Image 1 (tube, rainbow, N blue to C red):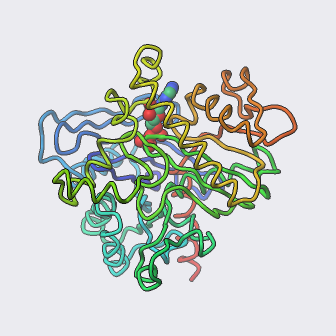
Image 2: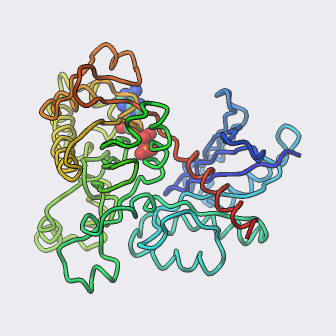
Image 3: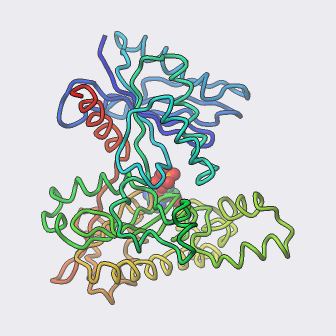
Length: 399
Ligand code: ADP
């Protein structure tokens, strides 16, 4: 039986997973990637091998009682039976919030799981979901090493001022501060800088993670010094369904004048705003691109998305006191040449010169000239998780 390491990423109704050989190789050897989606409504399991061929698929139509517990049991059986069987050596989890103190991944113990649960008020929609599979596995397979890798951890190198709001110190000390997210993606990109262009490693770089969630991160010599997401993953850029930065006065207005409860206002800002709210059409950039020639709402949503990126980009360039490179990643950043072109044209003030052919062709470098350069680097959060897990477990083994 091949020993494998499993990486899990739990969403509100989905469980994404990837499986890596536990072979001690420097470059993680990924053998499967897949997901359960529609958990709690119409569960569906699909898994592909390294070459992208579907090697497993199953539906449980209408089985609303099929959740994480059932999904993990099914996955464990599937791994045990598939291609001669796989034995789980460890599980790594994407955990949204590591609070102010977790600067690296950590091996989970019952005490640490409870401590992470105390951070749930900081990310009520995401943290409990991250912890659910961890608890299920701890119960089902008590001796199996589990590691949490945090979306906030990469940003803990930021200067104190970049992490503060202008509120009394006692509240900052109580944890009301800017944490930042998408850290597993930004950590991965930093590992790719030396391969893409060695000058990035020591340079001033802004990365744009543009997916359903979207944010920017400013790196000085590969370390995060500022980011657009703050206390929550609601802050910063326009996103698929989230508003991004909004005057806090609007939140009071929603409650006082529009009769929303705190939970309703939160739900509204997370799920009914952003690209879908502005366009009235879709949160999917592909749909907006198809319709933007004829649909004013689609055009306005895209224009606001790009406008806000340029505004926030300017703020990060100010924090870096200059800019050497801009990196695009995630669903929109990797695939949508139009958005990249619009962002780079808007950022001409910073000296970027778009190379339209390279951009359309999907090249790694998409600018020319002597000014700052722009690159496209596909992200890989699971790769960061498995690498961090291996570091943590090897240290534990030595200690
Ligand atoms: P998540 O944050 O859920 O991981 P992704 O990184 O997968 O999101 O990004 C999803 C976004 O990427 C969606 O808006 C989708 O429309 C967009 N996207 C994916 N492929 C393309 C494409 N070929 N052209 C334009 N947008 C794309």
